[in-house]
Length: 564
Image (cartoon, rainbow, N blue to C red; front, side):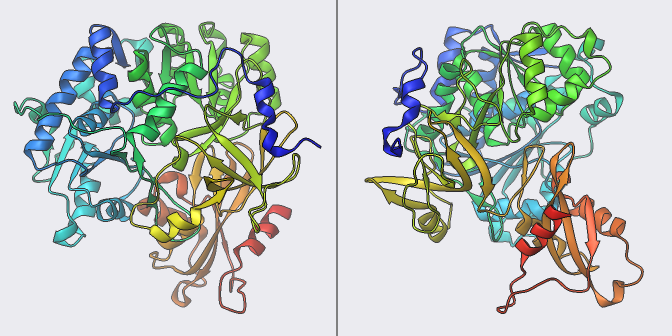
């Protein structure tokens, strides 16, 4: 039997790739400075037909950084970025980095009930958002104690980055267009984006280095509210630079930026990697299969990081035969397994093997990926540059032989530094093996004889709905606020399109029994939580199964649902 420590993937490692990366000893901000110097007039981003050059991206980020510092943002301070995909998201990120501060990206699907946690927990004092979300920021902020409230909010409109007249080939649906063009009244005290950029403030010297904190993205877990993951310029730099090396990148690349940039994958590839590589990104704020097809055709998109359901949806469009997708060279992603039939169609029609990958917020996106020249289907891939990943017994933490199922653990240069304000959770997330600190992913998997990893199950309670991670404990905490709900247990239910969907098993309050309907619970949830977290199925029960200590036996309900 091959011993795990032999690292069998080294035998099939692509000869074109180095085993480890030599990283710049600079901040992430410096990457934009370099690209703006190299390619000043080149399109960094395109948004519904309007281009933002690297020189303009640099100038706007400098101006906004000056405004942030003039309004009290100092080195290490956290600044929330709360937006859908748009050029302003990238400007905001680089402005915060230029100001030596820390980006706190927040899912724009969050409602005010959820958003307040990110303000209070991160200690942020400024939020950069869009006009359609400014009301959520203001409402959440008003409900916090004065000592925890934001000092300032800056709001942009999508039209600030759009052309006055849209080419029909670049236009979204009428409903999306109305949303993009909306200009609701801003809450009192909110600064308009254009006013901040034109205020004339000049940022002081940039002093952040590789080991300074740069990003605080939030992830949930088995219990409690979401926790912030501490990432430095160095931990983010690894995948920022490595993505280009792994995926045949460079300034000639044109990518489709539709994976949400608040999410770690979209952040690394859409907001950081493309800037560092000098490539061009065509941005979509929301998934639209027909618009995606038209944009790939028009802009000759070469690279697309996505989730498999997007490709399935694109193939299902009645307009698919009219799209010219021949420019595509590299498709990669994760979040859900790629169905074999779809993978075979990609190979047959385009000669492309979808390169699935695996990573977490804690690992700054990928820790594993399939080499595009030697990919395996429904596989996490092999550990990437400088990563040591093992399969261990989740109880004893002893390394297991090849082929056996255990917990996936990872050591690598992109692994986060710990959970913000949660030393206990940080300590339990790491352990020592062979003199190295390994992060426990909470995912169960196995490694084959060639060193490819496969996921088999989860130790953590988590629902994967079309690539969106839903943490049942977080949804339960929100459901307890519903005036109809006495108790709730959230579990996954199989779904033909999403893979899994959210199901809530609910005990109603006494006064709601007999007249409350499942639709009432779902409607309430839509008002109080992000759409992807909303239960699609609600089942009423008289009581939830509990252990002798009174804990809800969620696994019993989950197993019953899986066997139904």
